[in-house]
Amino acid sequence: MAGIVVIFDFDKTIIDCDSDNWVLDELGFTDLFNQLLPTMPWNPLMDKMMKELHAQGKTIDDIVEVLKRAPIHPRIVPAIKAAHALGCELRVVSDANMFFIETILEHLGLREYFSEIDSNPSFVDEEEKLRIFPYHDFTKSSHGCNLCPPNMCKGGVIERIQASLEGKKKIIYLGDGSGDYCPGLKLGEADYMMPRKNYPVWDLICRNPMLIKAEIYEWTDGEELEKVLLQLINMISLEEDDANSSQFISVDCKLQTMSASKNAFPHALPVPQ
Image (cartoon, rainbow, N blue to C red; front, top):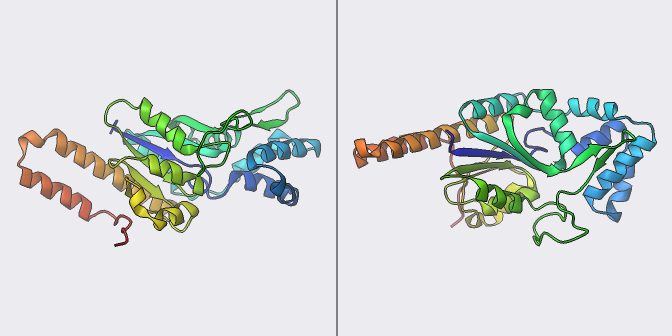
């Protein structure tokens, strides 16, 4: 199964909340955040909020303890471990930030399962204050994508990953937000898009599913994510096995095998006529 790269969004995909909002809500800074949100972009606002937390006596340990309590569906951790055990390469592409993501993954015992995390850089400075910066420095130049927030175009990240992949690797992309629509558009016909049903990315896809070249399989919660993801991995494995042994079996037999494996699989998103 070395031929599959599974790329996860983080907020509301791996964890069941928005990590930025979770930290601010739990530490009592939501009102200030909402007051300032109309005045500046989200990413630099989060950096400003970390300064405010520090000024009001909140420590890095306070932030870490809140992150450790972030809600997560009980089937997400087993799903990630199973996908890794099946030989998939796992990555995260997220508009959260590295400190939040790595803290939560380490707490869950999952950090080692991911080969790469692409997110907004962050670090603890000499004053023990968390600093958060944009993945793409939009103060110097634009990334040129009008679908994505100014600090990160996930589609651009996916294109970089695609360019780095060796051989005919398939991508499975999982996400929920509007920022996950652009990477979905970058996937090819051999790839798979797993949008969270009734979330912003799902709504965007449903407007015109034909724009997504990849096969689309929805999920609603962690239990369904696990089921669909692992069935997809197994289906791809069967197809690869069929392709590798095609010189030894008849065409009819091969088609029957592939058909049987797909018939047992959840239906893909229907395309309106």
